[in-house]
Each structure stands twice: as C-alpha cells, then as structure tokens.
Amino acid sequence: MSRSSRLAMAAVATAFVVPSAHASFVSYVVTSTSATVNGQSLLIYTLAARFDGPVDTVFRAYDLTASNSAWFQGFWHKDSMSDDFTEAPLSQTNGTWDPRRTGSSTLNRPYDSYLVIGGVASSGNTTVDQTDDIVSASFLSAGWDRPALPSNSDFEWLNQQPGNLQGRVGNSPGLPTTDVRLGQFVLSAGHEARTFSLSIAYTIGQTFDSDKDGEYDYQYATDTFTLGEPVPAPGAGALVALAALAAGRRRR
Image (cartoon, rainbow, N blue to C red; front, side):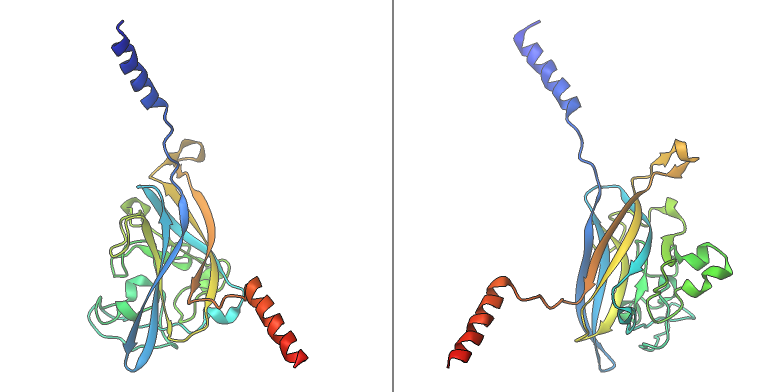
C-alpha cells in the first residue's frame, strides 16, 4: 500500500473517532421591551430556555419558586376569554396564564402575561397546566386561571402533545433558534426586581428509552432568572471608599 493511501485511511479513521458535542441546557434568557397601554407604563419580559443542540426539546416546566411571596403578584393581563378578535381590558385583578386564551395577536398578546412551552400564545398552542393534564380535585388550587403567578410547588405547565415538537429549539417564532419560549411576564414600569428559580424537563431530540417502557429519556435542569435589573451590592472598592470618607469626616 502506498504512503498516500495509508495517510488517507488514517484520516478517515480519525474522523470517525472524534466525539460529538453533548447538547444541553445553557441558561434561561430574559429579554424586555417597554410599552404604554391606556396610560399604564409597562415592562414586558420574555423568558426562554437556551440550549446548545439542534434538537433539544422542552416538555415541561415546574417548581417555580422565589424568596419573596410578593413577587408572584402584580402581573398585568390582557387576555380574551371568548374569541381571538376582541380587545380585552388590561387588568391586574382578572386574567389567566393560559396561552390559548390570549386572544388577538395584535391587541392582546403583546401585553398579556402567559406561560407556554414553545410556539406562540394562541388558541392552537398545546401547552396546558397540571390541572388540565391530570383531572384531580387535589390539583385545582394550583391552576393557572388567576392573575397572580401560581406559587403552589405542585404547579407545572407542559406540552400536552409532545410529538408536535412545539417545545423544540427553533419552534418559538421571534426568538433565536437556540431558544424555547417559556412565558411572557408583564409588570408595571419601575417595579422591584424579582428573581425566580425554575426547573425544566427536556430531551436531546425525540429519544425513547426502551428500559422505561418507551418513555422519553428526560434530562433535567434548574436555574434562576430575574425580571428587572437587581440593585448590585457595593463592591469591595466601594466599601473601602465609603470607609475612608467616613473616617475623613470624623477627623474634621
């Protein structure tokens, strides 16, 4: 065999042993815009889960927690309970987190708070809350038909039809192809920053586990996200400067 043939075969063999990158969850990503509706100044946040693989798919979100119970309150809703065309009133006392009941894509959706697993908020979205997926009276108190964020630790939202790939990266219109939309949160301008912890279950593609009776081979991730800009704690340099200033005043 010639030397050139041996080199060519070695190159082919090397190509087969190079390991592929392991796709996974990267972080939550929050983007924001501002708007004024009927004289009310609003900050509108989009929450997405970012991944580094081309077929990562979110199935459910759960265990939403925060250190301050007040952070589950104060969200604005503008959803229609009747049809996809009527403009709904902006309200903090009435509303739902159900993305199927947002209504008009131009009059309501841009200013409504909702939870979702991929896609966009519309009547055709297949996201449900736990009370829709599991018919049990014990779960009714954890439902999402309320203006406040559900704070019950049993609450979760999920894609009821995972085979439609609604929760896959690239299937959330308006977002980067690395992201999966998880919700929209609308708050009053000037609100206090609030940080939440959230867990998700996802797969690296539509992979079934034969050892689990054909269930999906789930991966799990937990991370935090913040709505608003938190006020940073003073750095070490700032603390030293403040101490020097105080000492100078005492000497005078």
